[in-house]
Length: 439
Ligand code: UGA
Image (tube, rainbow, N blue to C red; front, side, top):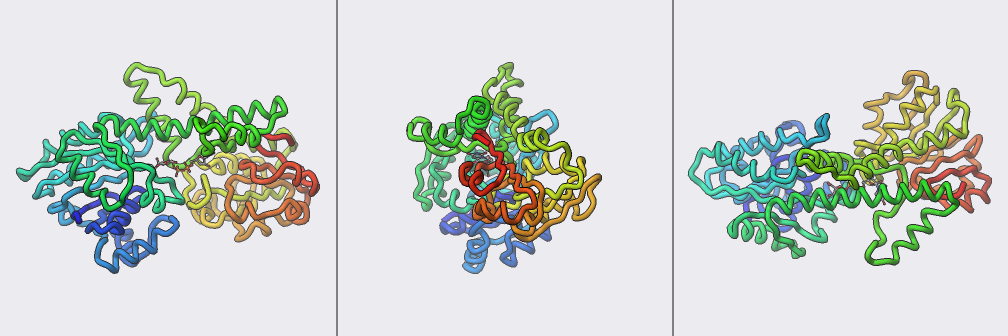
């Protein structure tokens, strides 16, 4: 059992901290936000994530996890400090490392015994060398501090499961001491560990995320071509997926990738390449395809309709994917403003993301149009002239073609997630437009 501190209680930090506690370690999660700390102490998760609250409560009651703003107390005698703070995108596409730097300095000024600092945040290759130097520069006690890279591969919506049952743990270290300590922290997880040097570990994170982003953009590119030549992207994906070299995951064409990771990490790697005098053409292409794909539904609908002015528009799903209330880089954020500008009266449904969306687009009048948030899919569809599907929530997937036909005034559906059968929609009398499939 190790004494672990975790800096940052976002998706990465909080989930890691609670999962370390679940595997028997003594964990203190540190955040600068006092209100957030109080909320977490009361057993409430500040993020929407399946199964997290139960684990928070269980481990808090067992005394294995605690939350604090007092970083000094948390870091001073920790065996390891995991850094899970954000590395948001800067205007030029590079990663903003100021939160990492702040935490690194706090660690340097607090640690009173040998400590392994483990960076979980996604950082450009080479950053951890600098973090280690930075900590050495500011160390106030004569103790051994080394930095390891331990990138995170959890996906939002399945974060707890992805952490406890990860397909692999990547650890990047520069000494036997660091490697052994990190390996033994992960021993209770019983998962495969890949041990490499620090720079390779940093690169594995970007290379993995960008490969997945590429896979999605590739399928979207092929889907767009399918539409032009009369092929069906879902059948094409199915046929491809039997080849184990291709695999059967992340082949779903749609309205592009969103979220806090792929958009940011593709740009960051492309930026890193440019900084090193190299043009990363594949990743650049993935970014370009994604940009266009986000507006695919709006562009299709604009070709079909003269105007959205005065039309009742049902919007099903606002988040960048189901299982999260996160709206970052969601296609809805690009399409809804265009619909409002055109005078649409939007009825939006999202089981958990509506509150966040309403912070950007409050209920009522927004420019030329209006937006109303409804609590079920039927209310959104009732008497609607047109429907957009942006997120494949369970409630949306459960809708039948006949329910669209019966509820909508004019059953015209633009589905960005290819949820329904083209044939069944046609049979039910619904005009159905999806991605990469016959209309
Ligand atoms: C992603 C990775 O999947 C995680 O492995 C990684 O740890 C994480 O980023 C991160 O770096 O923190 P996440 O952004 O939560 O996780 O979500 P994904 O499930 O990967 O989906 C990203 C986007 O791609 C969503 O908008 C989703 O709708 C889209 N997508 C995904 C597709 O359009 N098609 C697919 O086949 C799969």
